[in-house]
Image (cartoon, rainbow, N blue to C red; front, side, top):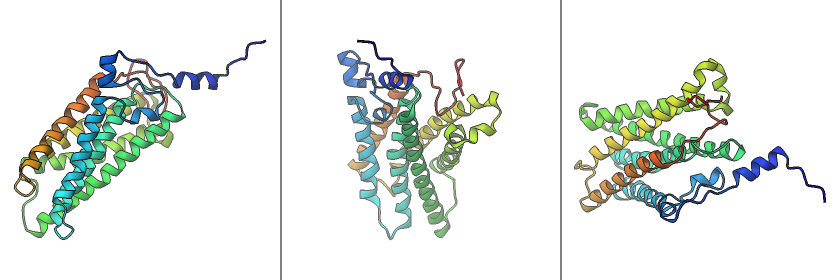
Length: 260
């Protein structure tokens, strides 16, 4: 019988569905390569599960232990633990995992998930910032005098700036067309690096706040500190182990093989 011609769309679909198996030991730690773009957002290895577990533990137990709807201050650690400890950590991980995936509708949907996660994290962070600012104003306390407060202010500024640049870099929104063509790859590169720096500064500010008497919960605080360490180690692991393949869809890239 005559051979059936394979269309470009079918070939692309077949290519995107391939799963690359790693050796057994590295598969345990890193998992197989995702079968499609959306699968990259789900835990697929022991390392992923440990980091996601640490995010969930920190993000949910801090509000459970500290939140009191009648105490304005408690809105600050509640919003920050959910915004940075849970959502932003997972959003940064998703961004790192999506770097190597090829173009296609599924990858664009995965990028929308990343964007939505980080946007929600932004609103929670702003809510936490407003809560602590108002709380200090009510009690007539000075702002941004401690190392934690100064790092927190820097984190908020970066948290607003990074997704703003990300929105410009996302070609689907059309904002990138307003940027000169030669500068478009730089926009995405700045977003990627600034996003990681933002998360690192936020985690440092979080670490400094945990021993504070207002939030210290004894052995539970020690568990929070361990979970923050696990999250930092996990993001570093993803950063150095996830492949950095070429991309030609969704975002522009700063590389010698950049495509816009």
